[in-house]
Length: 242
Image (cartoon, rainbow, N blue to C red; front, side):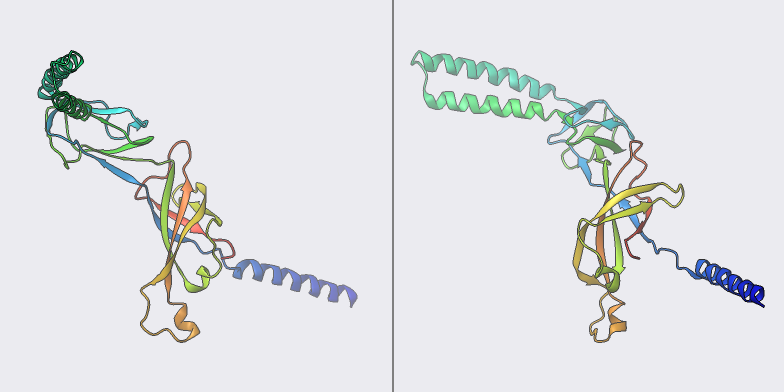
């Protein structure tokens, strides 16, 4: 009889364990789209593109020259204004010239030099070229994009969570992000929690209605060395205690 009782107890324990494993709820993952801070690069003056030093997908460093314009007219202007400035400076020292003439010549030279510096387009950041819109020989004009660049060392993902989940989240809280196609996991944190709900009903009175509220959460993830996280990809995010 004892053996039967022990056997029944063991069987019950096994059934309970199996039931717990079967009915245990898997952690819920929120899906979001990977975004990066993108910068569009356009020339400050009109000129023919003489040279493009990078293409789409190129790794770039801050200050690196990405494109050069053929600014022959600007170069001539620099030569002329430099000679005028040198002459005005010499005349001012010998009292043969006026301070006004010197200041005007200096302004013209500085202005021409500044415009000459605009003939090269440099990268404002360390990152990658996402898009190239023009080719060498084309006419570049202000506000017309030549490149779009981005820093992919860190990326942002916006997700929307219900009211109950929001109550458990804190800024700077650590979390995990998963690329569903590859299984790669990335470390991240909560950067911003929106104060205003999205799709909020006009009158929210009951507890059940409050769960219909969703709030925007900006999360930030550090990319790996291969920059696996790219703009437009889907990332599944698991929050603690979900």
